[in-house]
Amino acid sequence: MLKLSDYAGISPKPDLQLLARLADKLSPKRLLHINSTKEGGGVAEILNRMVPLLGGLGITVRWEVIRGDQRFFTITKKIHNSLQGLDETFTGDMWDYHFTVNEKNARTLDLDADAVFVHDPQPVPLIKFRKNGLWIWRCHIDVANPVESVWNRVSAYASSYDAAIFSVSKFARQIPLNEFIITPTIDPLSEKNLDMGQNEVCKVAEKYQIPLDKPLLLQVSRFDRFKDPNGVIRAYRMVKKYNDCRLVLAGSSATDDPEGEAVIREVQEFADGDPDIHILLLPAFSDRDINALQRMASVVLQKSLKEGFGLTVTEAMWKGKPVIGGNVGGIPTQIMNGVTGFLVNSEEGAAFRIRQLLNNPDLAARMGENAREYVRNHFLITRQIRDYLFVWYAMLNKSKSVLEL
Ligand code: UDP
Image (cartoon, rainbow, N blue to C red):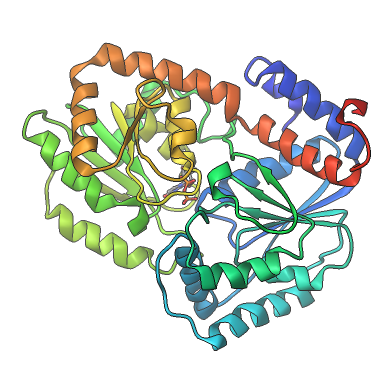
């Protein structure tokens, strides 16, 4: 079982101290996390690590996943897209179905807990079936400019919660409840982020038939149009005229994302058989392979057009890599332009920064070091658990001063 002491010397000491204090105050209370997938995407990634750690801290923790059929996940994907600003068509039936599937889940799930964290819009209607405890809606997506009618539907549920947590302040909306800003984080001790020797990195390169003969550009992402895989290919083609390099696009499609297959086909067609473009379809839980891919890259891209927080950015920064990220969602919270990476707004901008980094190894190394330290101080899992427990504690002790902790 993971222990807090395992993070000594890695996470900032004040985070560990406050976390231990909060856990002491809250254990053995019961905490329940609910989302819609065990694998694929950032939410599952975090919960897979956070849940055992919370258990190790003495909190009685459970993680439940709502079940749904293809129709349900097609609807929730449309909700997700619309909350990120894409105009999708909805009918009253679709909203009824969203509710009905949650109602069914409420009959089989044990919703009894002292605090319930409900992640994202798929399970947001579960609030209608609350039994007891504090209910907190944890919104991971960028709802800064949603389709208003869709936001109104979702916020009608969200406003019944006791509190809402958004990843970045610009995502937050005006809703009549307590709002908190908590950025996601990575676990430095997970298979995806642990230190790894060059031998293993080379073996993974062999496994995926990636010759390490020229600089490697990498984007790891679900195959989703908002991640702009074809834009990455266009930027690579601009670079390739001047700098020989390879491009690896690695990803899978999450089980709650029905569009993935179609996007993979689009990207394969667009790559048009270029032998220096490697499109890797990763099985679920390819954590060590992703770790190795991030380590073998010279430059990591996350050229998203819309993004939640962008954990792939954090992961690559932790590995000391210079990251070029789209100037959207939580990426600018992580990348201080020119210091901990580069922010770009276009394919041409991405190509320019890739070339700058390939031509200046010292700049790339310095940026990578800055990136790693920035992640150490701001985006490690111990800080996020500290903040979640703090929200829980603060909501329970509204009249008490924080100093009484
Ligand atoms: N990921 C993965 N396999 C894949 C693609 C992504 O394990 O094929 C992981 C990736 O390493 C990261 C998370 O899924 O930890 C993606 O989180 P992010 O916030 O970047 O994007 P999201 O998918 O949540 O939009």
